[in-house]
Image 1 (cartoon, one colour):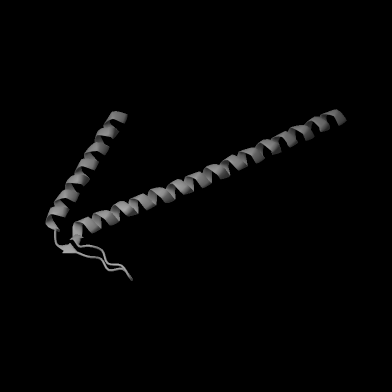
Image 2: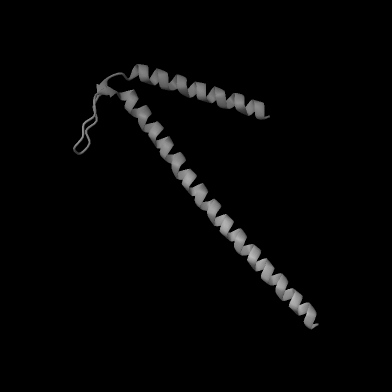
Length: 100
């Protein structure tokens, strides 16, 4: 099953590369982007669109990684807190057993 999944992922990536190639060949008009005080050199429309998708994907991966690290740290803190609480509970049970 893992082999089939790898083959499907490879086919999907190849398909996306093919679509990007066809898209870039059909959109070669050069344009420059104007920001507030900054103007870029002219590049094809496809280049700008593909770059924006790549940058967006990288930002998404970065945000996901930060959220994963935050969740991992929170989980680790909660596990420590649970261990301390379980130790305190065992201590209370031991004291109750002695008093009975």
